[in-house]
Length: 483
Ligand SMILES: NC(=O)c1ccc[n+]([C@@H]2O[C@H](COP(=O)([O-])OP(=O)(O)OC[C@H]3O[C@@H](n4cnc5c(N)ncnc54)[C@H](OP(=O)(O)O)[C@@H]3O)[C@@H](O)[C@H]2O)c1
Image (cartoon, rainbow, N blue to C red):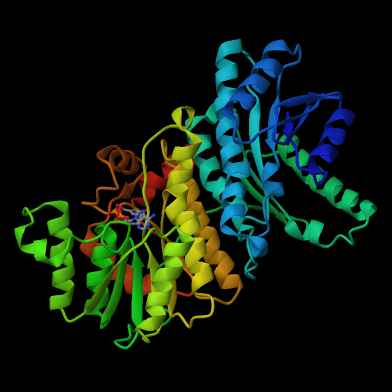
C-alpha cells in the first residue's frame, strides 16, 4: 500500500515493485473517500473513518498478504520558505495527522482480520533532517513526523519499518521537463526500494548526494566556545516564563546581569490589589511571588499574556516590545504542554493542541525576530524527540520541530539552539512513570540547580542542537544495542 505523492515517487516505486512481481495500490490525499480503477484511490488525511474503511477492505478482502505500507504524503507539504500559519497547520495534518489515522486504521484492521502477515510501515520525507556538516535549510513542515515516527516504533514495533529522508536536491536539480521530473522520481524510488527490500535494520536513514546516512548519538564534553554575557540594556523574552523551567531560567538570567525580562504565558497574573489576599501556596500566589522575587533582585519584569501560537497576539507583544525602545537580545522558547496518550486512543485535535505552542510558537517567533540582532534563540526541546517516548507521539513530534527549526535557522545564518533536555526533578511536566522508564534506560533526571549550571555551556556553544542528559552510559548503551 503506497500513500503516494503527486510528484511521481510513489508511482515510480509501484512500477519498480510490480516489475518484481508485487501488487500495489496507490492512495492519494484528497477530500473524499473514493476508489478508482487500477488500484488507485483518494482519502481525506483528516478523516479517521476513511483509513479504517480502506484498511479493513484491503486487509479483509484481499487474497494477497500486505507486506508494506509506505507513506509519502509528507512530500506534498509546503516548502519552508512559503509557509504561512495556515499552510503549516495543513501540512501537519497531511503529514503527522494522516499517519496518526493510518496507524490507528492499520492496527485495528490487523486485529479485526487476524492477519498473520504484519506489514512494515515506512515513513518518507524529503530534506527534513539536517545531515551534513554544511548546514542547509530544512523542510520544516515534514520534520515533526520524525519525532512521531520514533514513538510509533516503540508503541507498534510489530509494524515498524523506519524513517527515510530523501535527498531534496534531486527534485531541485530537475530542469522541470517531464523527463527530468520522471528521472528524479525514479532515482528516489530506487533508493526507497533498495532500503525497504534490502535494508540492514537501520530505521533512521537519509540520502544525500548519492550517500546513505544513518543516525547515531555522539557524546561530547561540554566546551564553552564563547562566553555568554547577558546585557543589562537588552530585553530577554521567555515564553512559558512563568512555568517551572521558565522561572528557574529567569532567575539565572537576572543573576547573570539581565535587567529586563518578558515572561510570556496564556494566563494573566491576578490584579495587584488582590496579591495580598491570595491563598498561600495557590498557583497564583506562587506566580506572583516569583515575579516579586525577580523584581527584588533588580529586574524589570513584564508579564505578557499571550498565546505563543496566536499570530495576532504575538504581533501585539512584539509591537509592545518595540515601543519599549530596548532591543530584544535573546529568546528562550519554553512554552509547551504535554499529555499522555497512546496513538490508538489519540484524537487529531489533541495531537494538534500539543503541537501548537511548540510548532506554531517557534515558527512565529522565528518570523517575528528575523530582522533583530539576537544573541540567542533557544528552544527547550526534549529527549523524547530523539528516541521516542511511549504515550507521547504528539509531544515528540512537537519537539522534533524545534530541533529542525534550530538547524534551519543556523543554515540561514541566524542564532539558534535546540536543547534536548532530559527531565528536571520537581517539574509537573514529568510524571513518575516517565522517570521510572528513563531510569530503566540509564537516564537520570536533572536536579534543577545542576541543570542550570550547564546553561552557560549550552548557550555558549555554536551547535544548533545539543542533548542535555545525564547518562549512565553502561546501562544506556546496553539498552540501545538491545532494541
Ligand atoms: N520539565 C522537564 O523536565 C522538561 C524536560 C524536557 C523538556 N522540557 C520542556 O521545557 C519547557 C518548559 O517545561 P516546564 O516543565 O517548565 O513546563 P511547565 O511548568 O508546564 O511550563 C510551561 C509553560 O508554558 C506555558 N504555555 C503553554 N502553552 C502556551 C501557549 N500556547 N502560549 C504561551 N504559553 C504557553 C504555560 O503557561 P500558561 O498555561 O499560562 O500558558 C506554562 O507556564 C517545555 O517546553 C517542555 O517541553 C521540560
